[in-house]
Length: 163
Image (tube, rainbow, N blue to C red; front, top):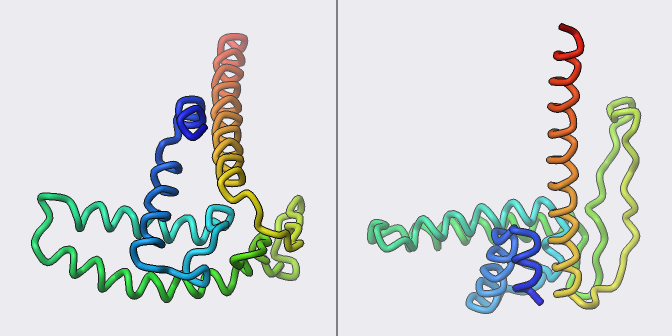
C-alpha cells in the first residue's frame, strides 16, 4: 500500500521521513514524550524531525569528517529537549491527539482566521492516518499548483485581450 501511495503522490520525502523517524525512535528507544505517534499532524514536530534528519544525512554521509557523528549526537541531545517542549505544547500523546492550540491575539488575527478545533481524539490506525496525511498534503500541493497555473493563464489571457 505504501508503494501505491508513493507512486501516486510523488512525495517520497514524507514517506522517507516517516521511515527515518520510525528508525530513530526504535534505535534510540525514544518515548512518546519525545516522538509521539501523530508527530506528522503537528508542523512544529514535522519541521524539527525533518531538520534533524537532514542533519543526520549530512553528518553520516560517507564523505563527512570523522567527528560529524559526534556533532550529530550532541545536536540530537539538544533536539530531544526541543522535541519534548514541542510535544508538551502540542498536547499530542501516545494514546490521544489534538491539533496544537493557537492563542489568538486580540485584534491581531486576520478577519478570515478561525480557531482550529482542538478536540482530543484517540490514536488508532496510525499508519492509515499517516497515509491519509500524505494524501492530504498531495491534494493541497496540487490545488495550490492548479491555482497558480490558472492565475498565470488568466493573466496571459488578460494581457492578450488588452492589446
